[in-house]
Image (cartoon, rainbow, N blue to C red; front, side, top):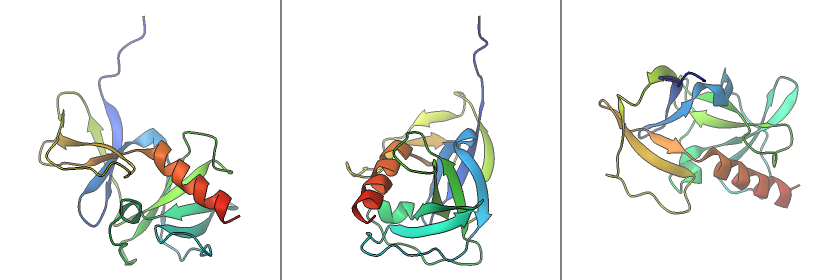
Amino acid sequence: MAERVQEVYSLLIPLVEGRLIIPRACVAEVIGFHTPSEMTGAPPWYIGTVAWTGRQVPLVSFEGACGQMIPPASGRTRIVIFHCIGSRLEGGYFGIVSQGFPQLVRVSSDVVRPDNSRAIEERAPIVCQIRMVNETPLVPDLERLEDMIAQETHINA
């Protein structure tokens, strides 16, 4: 019988207001911010593409995808490169702008509880919010975000 996983290594990704939490396995790499190549006609949250390991990777602002103001880049800004969950994005990766370096945490059922204190817009790429000790990170809907990127990539190709 397979042993049940007791803890999941996760990353807390800083946003302007709050953080995202995602399993560490979803992330390919965290890189320094560099100016992306813009995509003409794309919505503001689709920032453009960045070079990573010899390929062009779509880069988005999570805040922008949720309808919030897109923060300007600073010296602390990073790009978190994600493995795609689905197969809609050519190349298999996309990036999210982070407002600092992600923090590695171990998450178990002992420290995580649902938190319904925040209203989440239906169209936002968010699954839910959780409570973790003194944190209330958002769980992003990475598949929805991939679909949003794929739709824009297809329209503007």
